[in-house]
Length: 323
Image (cartoon, rainbow, N blue to C red):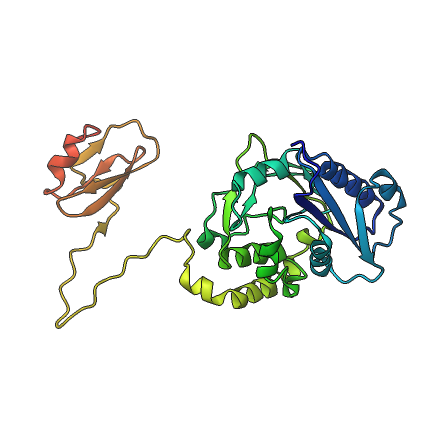
């Protein structure tokens, strides 16, 4: 796109405490500045303990902000968005990467809609991990139970304000999931941006904040269910099949239908049929007349069946009369 007008602001909260993270930040910024759509890139440094001078030197057009005090990723992301000038926001974690066409494809997927946000398929990568995750088409009911939208979704900055920003109650995790749900509950529809390849490369790495949720997962889920209790009440989990309910009994109880009997007659010396089939394991046969299951094995082929079931079982072809 041949315009220099800032349409999309890519916002990135960072807190660099390990040497490896400097390289990941460099790669993330390179992917942000390599977009086919002209973007503003805003970084909020949330108390990094390592010097970022070398990264700042390589990306001089990046707008750097921050504090020496570590206030957490939720506060840092909200602050970066507040500082952004573009009408559209695209968050990016400092260890992830965007495909060059990511911002443009997601913006085009919205087709000028101001009441929607866009997300894409994901490519997971990292030590021992290399796989693609095709995200489902948008479904609010499913989103309430499955966090299938990553933090790198494109949305109007006004939507961020209307949703109340990222929620500090989810500082330890799930803040992107909670935010996506908040967008949807505030009237913004999700649009899956379809492309030939996933638009976000999502890094899996040991020690990452999103990999260390387990000690807090129960607490975070409880908070999530509390915050969105009304929506969860309205929208049941669509993955669960509806249970059939039995009719209420009125008056005298009805007699129950005859139940299926399970009987094992394998190896009965008084058997009246013999199994001649090729199956080497245990064979189950259903006698429809008496609603009985019979079983026999190739090693013990004689079977005694009820006279009412005898004709149908012999007619199968793998049983013959005996003797």
